[in-house]
Amino acid sequence: GQQLNQSPQSMFIQEGEDVSMNCTSSSIFNTWLWYKQDPGEGPVLLIALYKAGELTSNGRLTAQFGITRKDSFLNISASIPSDVGIYFCAGPTGGGNKLTFGTGTQLKVEL
Amino acid sequence: DSGVTQTPKHLITATGQRVTLRCSPRSGDLSVYWYQQSLDQGLQFLIQYYNGEERAKGNILERFSAQQFPDLHSELNLSSLELGDSALYFCASSVGPRGLTYTGELFFGEGSRLTVL
Image (cartoon, chains in turn blue, red):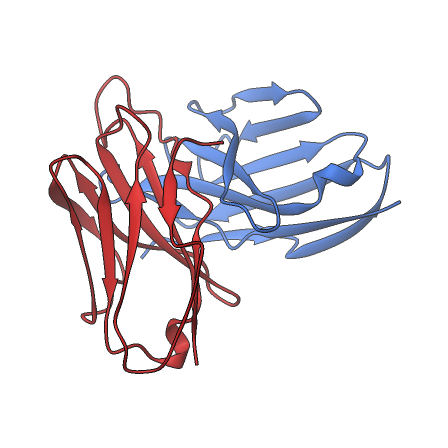
């Protein structure tokens, strides 16, 4: 099946630093979604992208839909302790009837 | 609060046993999805129902089954449990799988943590 690979797998950063992560696929996607999972919680949607080349922001978060439609990027500016969690990219597959999730990037913030 | 309710939150059982996990979707959502999250596997799609009918199936084991009832709540049944079934099981809901209102956004519950001893 389709696989979404995220990198880095995990990262340890200092509070205040900017963060970049990406998601790649061997297949083309028409929609890219970025979710965040806090410890002990279910994933929550952060940003949705619907068009190749699209750049969308949500507060300190900015995501881009890659031109090839096979990748997406998420940037977090000026990280804070509550940014800790696992970030997942996701895209509709199976004719749009299900959401396939990436392997996740775990973010840890040092105070 | 996503509006999706899952019960129980935690469950400890023994190998060979059978358990049922329950999910109530957000008000108005017709689609329910089940995902399994174990430490080394990420979020794995199991199955999707739309308005009572099965719409998509993922890597769901034959020992597992699910259904969506007329009131739209869903149950995931796990039988002949093995140690490897220990995981977080998430339910998510959305308005529907396709159409003008479909954005790909799923709303997740807090999950049911299953421990098989």
